[in-house]
Image (cartoon, rainbow, N blue to C red; front, side, top):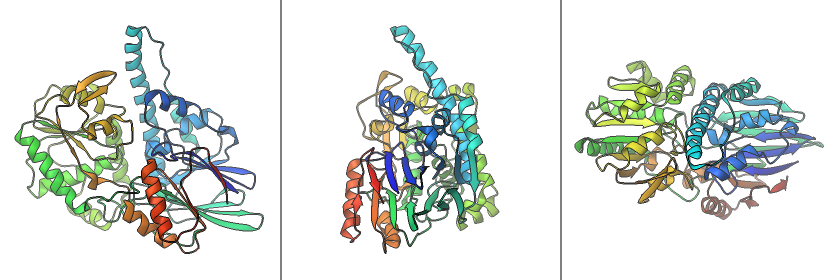
Length: 463
């Protein structure tokens, strides 16, 4: 049996890890690679393996960098089952449709510019119809129940505490009379995050594939989130500006809404209007309401007292395009929460284009920003940024709240790996920028774990 690392190897996005056992192939995740537009399109269009040869896919969660290239996999010949949790199945059904819709709209916008410049048109990665066809292959499972994947391979999905429905995958692989337990963290969450349960600890693994997004960083105390968000609201309110929050439509948007709700109830921020300008976030919030089984005890108690963690007076969910455009004509103070979280697509680009040059406004970064993304350039406070190919001066205030992160930091990762360590024969560190992955690998090695590897894309390892 062997593993080939085809994505999120010394990089954060595009998660894809291929398991070969018993003559079968099992893919862990099939995410979109995000970064420079040309490189991303090239890598996402051209899968590094024969899609028809993949027998099954096990999906860790519904973020686009983990599920977003499933339609390409299916239209390239994949016909196996896509295993995931029940909440992930519901979220993926809206995520992939939205990804296709946004990609098509963005391509139309880019092609208008191409026509004016005499450049050839580009095609969308996949259409809404192709995304919907891919959904036919989803098979949903409850947490904590074993199920067959392929001949000789069984899996169980454990709560990862990262986003709604996120899972740690444990594969039990039997080949030639030998059984190997392989764990895959997907994206590992944190203890004491709002809304969700803490990540499940895992023991008795032979091999582990672990994420390392924050492999050499420590988060701020999660208890500081409310204070920092309140400060950002109050500072922007005093300038009568707009607080623009790029946020992933799944999890981060709901966390921000829930925190604003709590601040409003406590009288710590004024009752200024809040607009959630993302059809996907609206749909995702409805799915959150359908899955209280994923909530932690505190959120379930809030649900009983207040009925709706994701609704309060002054909160507006904006679905159609005309309502979205009207926000750019309105004066502050106000809060606009919009996707995508890394500012690479969707309505957030239009809000940034229209508001980023006004010093009264604030861009509040509450999500991890991968290299070469617009969000990363804003977080680093580049003097000039390009949006839809045009250059804008970054005059708005920029604030970053790392404590909102749903990824475990270095100490939290080491704590979690510590439970799996007895008996571990090897650890593969993925899903992190190279310096973060290497630092985490070194820290794991220092704790006397054998054979810790940071694979390159395309590396193949025998177990």
